Image (cartoon, rainbow, N blue to C red; front, top):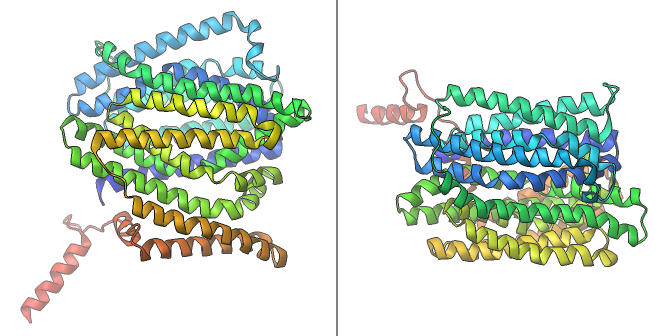
Length: 517
């Protein structure tokens, strides 16, 4: 199997299982605890995500630097030690200050019930920084098994503890606070596991080096993520309040925000894990190729990543637009969440393109470009999110997010073209869009007819299979992607006892028989 495809299979396999468990958990939370609890947790978590971004830049830069230092484990360990020192010291100071002034933090939340949830999760600011550094070390060394399996472990532990705490099994805590406690404990346990794996794999804490280099490169990345998280926090704080001014009660506004932020958008963004998996695999390769000056090879990898992202967006748009209502209602038991999934599915095209181009730029050392592009996206997003609720309600968040990702995608593509030359295959992308959009609308009409006559889960699955079949026929007919080749790459090669691939042995035997004859 091709090394890239093998690594992609490993990362994607773990990502699929992890996200599947995450969705199962969200289903349990939404059904057992309700949209209001989801909303409270999402609001508190959005502020935590803002804090995470303060130390998030160094680990990302660390993975690239480790890839560039391939074969020099001493330098890799020195860079990792430096990153751990910077991240732990900074996050420790922030946590101490926030606990010292905890009685004055209520202004951060639109609902005062979010503050205890936030304080429970606050220690994860330190543990997540350590967790990210260890995972970046494995990432840069292309050890994708350790990189991905620990994320799955984190999700499993979090789910189990959440059910114990939030489900009322433990009497002293429940609801969103129970989920927050589960997050804190699972994060700490995963740091211990990663530390052990780091030592087993040859990682050591040694004399640090590269403070200046890591900090210089990390600042734009941290700033980029701070912008993203601040916009999410402002949205979590302001949007429910604006919805209240538009006539909703506080509980209704919090639940509506919980539906779009905690149910609909995470479901819409689920396919992004496929794009993220490919980016994870390609980033060390792109960084090492860039360091060795192989621009043509870098261009081919960027082109493949962008084409793959567009294909993923087309496939899931064709499914989400007609079937999102059924999927949302089935998974979350909330018809309104399903309606939001269908109506906001157009976001997929912009999301996947932004998600694939941003890591590519970072792997090429263009962190400043990603910062400026994210700033431009936020400048477009916030007016939409804050001004449109009175006209379109909670859909303002979807419109604002889509506008943000559109701007980021366009600017990223321009920056990538300047770095590696022209890599866009516009014809293939246009053909895919030209077919997938009408096919999605055909799915909407077909769904209405089927629902009126039959309905049910079987009808939904039948329509989904039919839509995907038609899209794949089109993709193959117009040579947008070689699906047969991908299947052949994913299929494992059987080996003989002597170590030779089974297919090679069969071909050799046939050739030998022909020779004898």
